[in-house]
Image 1 (cartoon, rainbow over the protein chains, first blue to last red):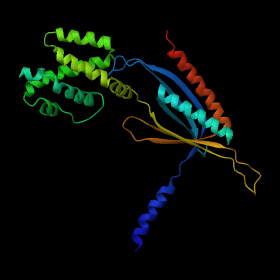
Image 2: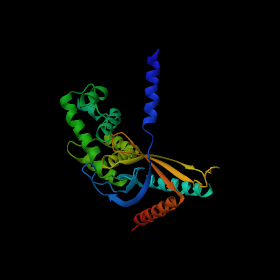
Image 3: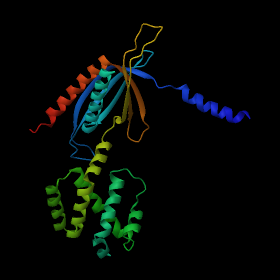
Image 4: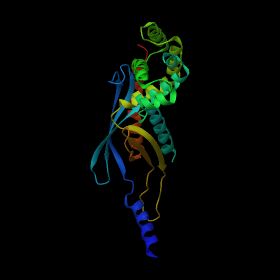
Length: 91
Length: 188
Protein backbone atom coordinates (compact mmCIF):
# COMPACT_ATOMS: atom_id res chain seq x y z
CA UNK A 1 0.00 0.00 0.00
CA UNK A 2 2.85 2.37 0.86
CA UNK A 3 5.03 1.60 -2.13
CA UNK A 4 3.23 3.57 -4.86
CA UNK A 5 3.08 6.61 -2.55
CA UNK A 6 6.78 6.39 -1.77
CA UNK A 7 7.61 6.17 -5.44
CA UNK A 8 5.34 9.09 -6.28
CA UNK A 9 6.58 11.16 -3.39
CA UNK A 10 10.18 10.90 -4.45
CA UNK A 11 9.17 11.92 -7.96
CA UNK A 12 7.43 15.00 -6.58
CA UNK A 13 10.20 15.99 -4.17
CA UNK A 14 12.70 15.26 -6.89
CA UNK A 15 11.03 17.94 -8.96
CA UNK A 16 10.83 20.52 -6.22
CA UNK A 17 14.21 19.73 -4.70
CA UNK A 18 16.14 21.64 -7.36
CA UNK A 19 14.31 24.83 -8.25
CA UNK A 20 15.63 26.87 -11.16
CA UNK A 21 18.08 29.40 -9.78
CA UNK A 22 17.38 32.81 -11.16
CA UNK A 23 20.60 34.63 -11.55
CA UNK A 24 21.54 38.21 -12.01
CA UNK A 25 23.67 39.27 -14.91
CA UNK A 26 26.62 41.12 -13.42
CA UNK A 27 28.62 41.68 -16.56
CA UNK A 28 28.28 41.08 -20.28
CA UNK A 29 31.38 40.88 -22.48
CA UNK A 30 31.37 40.19 -26.16
CA UNK A 31 33.71 39.60 -29.06
CA UNK A 32 33.05 39.45 -32.77
CA UNK A 33 35.32 36.85 -34.35
CA UNK A 34 35.95 35.44 -37.79
CA UNK A 35 36.81 31.77 -38.13
CA UNK A 36 39.15 31.64 -41.11
CA UNK A 37 40.42 28.11 -41.41
CA UNK A 38 40.51 24.82 -39.53
CA UNK A 39 42.03 21.38 -39.80
CA UNK A 40 38.83 20.04 -41.35
CA UNK A 41 38.07 23.02 -43.54
CA UNK A 42 40.63 25.33 -45.12
CA UNK A 43 38.06 27.86 -46.14
CA UNK A 44 35.74 28.31 -43.18
CA UNK A 45 35.33 32.06 -43.29
CA UNK A 46 32.37 32.50 -40.99
CA UNK A 47 31.83 35.30 -38.48
CA UNK A 48 30.56 34.53 -34.98
CA UNK A 49 29.74 36.37 -31.76
CA UNK A 50 31.42 35.09 -28.61
CA UNK A 51 29.79 36.07 -25.32
CA UNK A 52 31.02 35.93 -21.72
CA UNK A 53 28.37 36.33 -19.05
CA UNK A 54 29.22 36.90 -15.42
CA UNK A 55 26.24 35.68 -13.43
CA UNK A 56 25.59 35.92 -9.70
CA UNK A 57 23.37 33.41 -7.98
CA UNK A 58 21.23 34.44 -4.96
CA UNK A 59 24.12 33.61 -2.59
CA UNK A 60 26.29 36.16 -4.35
CA UNK A 61 28.66 33.71 -5.97
CA UNK A 62 29.71 34.85 -9.43
CA UNK A 63 30.31 32.38 -12.22
CA UNK A 64 31.47 32.80 -15.82
CA UNK A 65 29.39 31.33 -18.61
CA UNK A 66 30.53 31.61 -22.18
CA UNK A 67 28.99 30.62 -25.48
CA UNK A 68 29.12 31.35 -29.19
CA UNK A 69 26.44 32.41 -31.61
CA UNK A 70 26.37 32.50 -35.38
CA UNK A 71 25.33 35.83 -36.85
CA UNK A 72 21.72 34.70 -37.52
CA UNK A 73 21.52 33.38 -33.95
CA UNK A 74 22.80 36.69 -32.60
CA UNK A 75 20.27 38.62 -34.66
CA UNK A 76 17.49 36.48 -33.27
CA UNK A 77 18.83 37.04 -29.74
CA UNK A 78 18.92 40.80 -30.33
CA UNK A 79 15.43 40.80 -31.82
CA UNK A 80 14.04 38.87 -28.84
CA UNK A 81 15.72 41.27 -26.44
CA UNK A 82 14.17 44.25 -28.22
CA UNK A 83 10.79 42.58 -27.76
CA UNK A 84 11.50 42.12 -24.05
CA UNK A 85 12.36 45.82 -23.81
CA UNK A 86 9.15 46.78 -25.58
CA UNK A 87 7.04 44.57 -23.32
CA UNK A 88 8.68 45.55 -20.03
CA UNK A 89 8.11 49.19 -20.87
CA UNK A 90 4.39 48.72 -21.21
CA UNK A 91 3.89 46.53 -18.14
CA UNK B 1 34.29 -4.58 -62.82
CA UNK B 2 35.36 -1.10 -63.85
CA UNK B 3 32.12 -0.68 -65.73
CA UNK B 4 30.12 -1.03 -62.51
CA UNK B 5 32.10 1.74 -60.87
CA UNK B 6 31.56 4.06 -63.79
CA UNK B 7 27.81 4.03 -63.42
CA UNK B 8 26.46 7.24 -61.97
CA UNK B 9 23.26 6.08 -60.26
CA UNK B 10 24.78 4.60 -57.13
CA UNK B 11 27.30 7.46 -56.89
CA UNK B 12 24.70 9.85 -55.50
CA UNK B 13 23.97 7.39 -52.72
CA UNK B 14 27.67 6.92 -52.12
CA UNK B 15 28.26 10.65 -51.76
CA UNK B 16 25.38 10.86 -49.27
CA UNK B 17 26.90 8.08 -47.23
CA UNK B 18 30.32 9.71 -47.36
CA UNK B 19 28.89 13.07 -46.28
CA UNK B 20 27.06 11.45 -43.35
CA UNK B 21 30.24 9.78 -42.17
CA UNK B 22 32.77 12.55 -42.89
CA UNK B 23 30.83 15.68 -42.00
CA UNK B 24 27.69 14.85 -40.08
CA UNK B 25 29.35 12.44 -37.65
CA UNK B 26 27.18 9.46 -38.46
CA UNK B 27 28.81 6.37 -37.01
CA UNK B 28 28.64 2.95 -38.60
CA UNK B 29 28.82 3.79 -42.28
CA UNK B 30 31.52 1.34 -43.20
CA UNK B 31 33.23 0.62 -46.48
CA UNK B 32 31.54 -2.75 -46.56
CA UNK B 33 28.09 -1.27 -45.95
CA UNK B 34 28.48 1.17 -48.82
CA UNK B 35 29.85 -1.47 -51.14
CA UNK B 36 27.19 -4.05 -50.41
CA UNK B 37 24.34 -1.53 -50.64
CA UNK B 38 25.49 0.40 -53.69
CA UNK B 39 28.06 -1.61 -55.60
CA UNK B 40 27.35 -5.25 -54.73
CA UNK B 41 28.95 -6.56 -57.94
CA UNK B 42 32.29 -4.88 -57.16
CA UNK B 43 34.97 -6.53 -55.03
CA UNK B 44 36.20 -4.82 -51.89
CA UNK B 45 39.74 -4.54 -53.32
CA UNK B 46 38.43 -2.61 -56.30
CA UNK B 47 35.92 -0.61 -54.30
CA UNK B 48 38.36 0.66 -51.70
CA UNK B 49 40.48 2.95 -53.94
CA UNK B 50 37.33 4.17 -55.69
CA UNK B 51 35.79 5.14 -52.35
CA UNK B 52 39.03 6.85 -51.30
CA UNK B 53 39.04 8.83 -54.53
CA UNK B 54 35.45 10.02 -54.06
CA UNK B 55 36.05 10.83 -50.41
CA UNK B 56 39.12 12.86 -51.38
CA UNK B 57 37.20 14.79 -54.01
CA UNK B 58 34.32 15.57 -51.66
CA UNK B 59 36.70 16.67 -48.91
CA UNK B 60 38.60 18.96 -51.30
CA UNK B 61 35.40 20.60 -52.47
CA UNK B 62 34.11 21.08 -48.91
CA UNK B 63 37.44 22.25 -47.54
CA UNK B 64 37.74 24.96 -50.17
CA UNK B 65 34.06 25.79 -49.90
CA UNK B 66 33.99 25.90 -53.68
CA UNK B 67 31.62 28.16 -55.50
CA UNK B 68 30.13 26.92 -58.73
CA UNK B 69 32.88 28.29 -60.96
CA UNK B 70 35.61 26.74 -58.85
CA UNK B 71 33.63 23.50 -58.75
CA UNK B 72 33.32 23.29 -62.53
CA UNK B 73 37.02 23.99 -63.01
CA UNK B 74 38.00 21.46 -60.35
CA UNK B 75 35.76 18.70 -61.70
CA UNK B 76 36.84 19.30 -65.29
CA UNK B 77 40.46 18.90 -64.17
CA UNK B 78 39.50 15.65 -62.44
CA UNK B 79 37.98 14.27 -65.65
CA UNK B 80 41.20 14.98 -67.54
CA UNK B 81 43.41 13.27 -64.96
CA UNK B 82 44.81 9.76 -65.29
CA UNK B 83 42.65 7.60 -63.01
CA UNK B 84 40.26 10.50 -62.54
CA UNK B 85 36.51 10.57 -62.94
CA UNK B 86 34.12 10.33 -65.86
CA UNK B 87 31.99 13.23 -67.10
CA UNK B 88 28.86 11.50 -65.80
CA UNK B 89 30.43 11.18 -62.36
CA UNK B 90 31.46 14.84 -62.46
CA UNK B 91 27.84 15.78 -63.15
CA UNK B 92 26.61 13.71 -60.20
CA UNK B 93 29.20 15.23 -57.86
CA UNK B 94 28.33 18.73 -59.05
CA UNK B 95 24.63 18.16 -58.44
CA UNK B 96 25.34 16.69 -55.02
CA UNK B 97 27.47 19.61 -53.86
CA UNK B 98 24.91 22.15 -55.07
CA UNK B 99 22.15 20.58 -53.02
CA UNK B 100 24.16 19.62 -49.92
CA UNK B 101 26.63 22.46 -49.66
CA UNK B 102 24.77 24.43 -46.99
CA UNK B 103 24.24 21.47 -44.72
CA UNK B 104 27.84 20.30 -45.04
CA UNK B 105 29.12 23.79 -44.33
CA UNK B 106 26.97 23.98 -41.23
CA UNK B 107 28.41 20.69 -39.98
CA UNK B 108 31.95 21.92 -40.62
CA UNK B 109 31.21 25.12 -38.70
CA UNK B 110 29.83 23.11 -35.77
CA UNK B 111 32.86 20.83 -35.80
CA UNK B 112 35.19 23.78 -35.32
CA UNK B 113 33.21 25.35 -32.50
CA UNK B 114 34.52 24.14 -29.18
CA UNK B 115 32.78 26.55 -26.85
CA UNK B 116 29.11 26.08 -25.97
CA UNK B 117 26.57 27.10 -28.56
CA UNK B 118 23.22 28.73 -27.98
CA UNK B 119 20.60 26.04 -28.41
CA UNK B 120 17.49 27.78 -27.23
CA UNK B 121 16.10 30.94 -25.78
CA UNK B 122 12.83 31.69 -24.04
CA UNK B 123 11.61 34.54 -21.87
CA UNK B 124 8.73 36.05 -19.99
CA UNK B 125 8.03 39.36 -18.30
CA UNK B 126 6.51 39.38 -14.84
CA UNK B 127 4.34 42.39 -14.21
CA UNK B 128 4.02 44.92 -11.44
CA UNK B 129 2.55 43.61 -8.27
CA UNK B 130 1.33 45.30 -5.18
CA UNK B 131 0.44 44.08 -1.78
CA UNK B 132 -2.20 45.47 0.51
CA UNK B 133 0.12 44.94 3.46
CA UNK B 134 3.30 46.19 2.01
CA UNK B 135 4.11 49.54 0.48
CA UNK B 136 6.76 47.93 -1.67
CA UNK B 137 5.73 47.57 -5.29
CA UNK B 138 7.42 44.87 -7.23
CA UNK B 139 8.65 46.33 -10.46
CA UNK B 140 8.44 44.41 -13.71
CA UNK B 141 11.08 41.84 -14.26
CA UNK B 142 12.18 39.96 -17.36
CA UNK B 143 13.20 36.36 -16.94
CA UNK B 144 15.22 34.80 -19.70
CA UNK B 145 16.19 31.17 -20.02
CA UNK B 146 19.18 30.35 -22.18
CA UNK B 147 19.88 26.81 -23.25
CA UNK B 148 23.58 26.37 -23.97
CA UNK B 149 25.66 23.31 -24.67
CA UNK B 150 28.80 21.93 -26.24
CA UNK B 151 28.72 19.64 -29.24
CA UNK B 152 27.52 16.18 -28.23
CA UNK B 153 26.95 17.19 -24.61
CA UNK B 154 23.84 17.80 -22.58
CA UNK B 155 22.41 21.29 -22.38
CA UNK B 156 22.86 23.64 -19.48
CA UNK B 157 20.01 25.98 -18.66
CA UNK B 158 20.84 29.46 -17.52
CA UNK B 159 18.04 31.46 -15.97
CA UNK B 160 18.63 35.20 -15.83
CA UNK B 161 16.61 37.98 -14.26
CA UNK B 162 16.58 41.57 -15.52
CA UNK B 163 14.82 44.68 -14.34
CA UNK B 164 13.99 47.44 -16.83
CA UNK B 165 17.28 49.24 -16.22
CA UNK B 166 19.30 46.12 -16.85
CA UNK B 167 17.30 45.31 -19.98
CA UNK B 168 18.14 48.71 -21.44
CA UNK B 169 21.79 48.42 -20.46
CA UNK B 170 22.08 45.08 -22.21
CA UNK B 171 20.16 46.37 -25.21
CA UNK B 172 22.78 49.08 -25.61
CA UNK B 173 25.58 46.49 -25.57
CA UNK B 174 23.75 44.38 -28.12
CA UNK B 175 23.34 47.35 -30.43
CA UNK B 176 27.11 47.82 -30.28
CA UNK B 177 27.58 44.22 -31.34
CA UNK B 178 25.14 44.79 -34.20
CA UNK B 179 27.10 47.85 -35.29
CA UNK B 180 30.32 45.85 -35.28
CA UNK B 181 28.70 43.18 -37.41
CA UNK B 182 27.50 45.77 -39.93
CA UNK B 183 31.02 47.18 -40.17
CA UNK B 184 32.45 43.73 -40.71
CA UNK B 185 29.91 42.80 -43.35
CA UNK B 186 30.38 45.92 -45.37
CA UNK B 187 31.90 45.15 -48.77
CA UNK B 188 35.59 46.08 -48.81
